Every structure is written in C-alpha cells, then in structure tokens.
Length: 183
Figure 1 (spheres, rainbow, N blue to C red):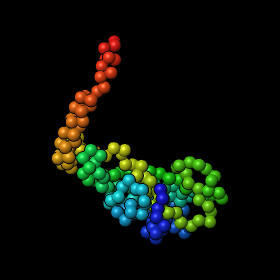
Figure 2: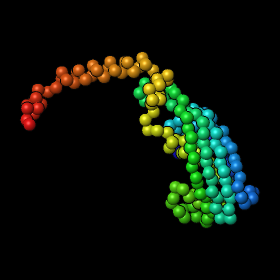
Figure 3: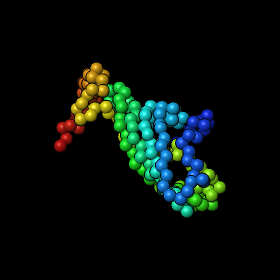
Figure 4: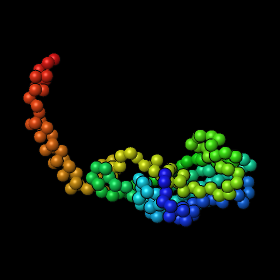
C-alpha cells in the first residue's frame, strides 16, 4: 500500500478532520475515480467509478467507522484478456482508538492514533478494501453470458492448447512406456 510522494495532495481529499467533530454519528461521502487508483503504484485496479460512504461514530476514547463502497471497476479477463466491468459492493468496519503509542495493539480491525493527531486519512483503508475484494481469478463470463469474452481469443487458445497436447503425446520418452506396463 505505497502511494507516490506526489499523491499527498490528491489523497488529502480522503481525510476526515475529526478533532472538531462533536460526539455522535457523522457521515462522509467520497468519490473514487481513476485518479485515485493512479496514486498507488502497484494497484490491482487501474480504473473505476465508485462511491464510498463512511459512517463515523465518535465516542470519548474511540471512533467506529463503517465503510460502504459501491460501484464498478474495470478488470482484465485472465482467460481472453478482454476488459470488462465488475460490480463492487464492500462493507467494512474499522475501530480507531486514541492512545499515546501507535504500537499499543497489533490488530487489523483496531487502529491506534496519537492524541495529538487531528485528522484521519482514509485513502489507504479504501484502497486496501477495494483491492482485497478483487477475486484472484478474473473471468468476464457471467454464467455462460459471453458478451464481454473475446471469442476469437478463446478459439485461438483452444487451437493452441490442442496442438500442445498432441506434441506432448508424440514427444513422450519411450523409457516411460515400460513403466506403463507395471501394475
């Protein structure tokens, strides 16, 4: 989760100045576009249009953040290499405690902020939630619907995989044939 140094101003718009907030619930809305993903060097997602609603409940010693991220990201199919839209719906929770030392707790769900801090930058959390929500394998087919899948590429792959299998069968080392007879 490394951002470019030039991105500090762009990612600053994803900050919440919590110091002046009254106790209770507050809501913040953020737009996530291509420029957001461009700020992260190794992002799995390069293009997208999402909205992030953050419900913040400020208490005396902590804040509870509820993230709802919805929208569409652009993905590349691992099978045919065509670009397709993928819907995203993410719901996450983050607890932020106030303490003297940031290393008080080592829990993914609990962040510790120094009491001197006055704002919370959410860009890293939003980036992480979106990238973790991406499936390991991206396939543009949707239960047999091939409107995005590049049929020409799929046919080429079938042809190539068939010729590779034929070559493997023909190039088998004859020494292995002796082992096939052992049973």
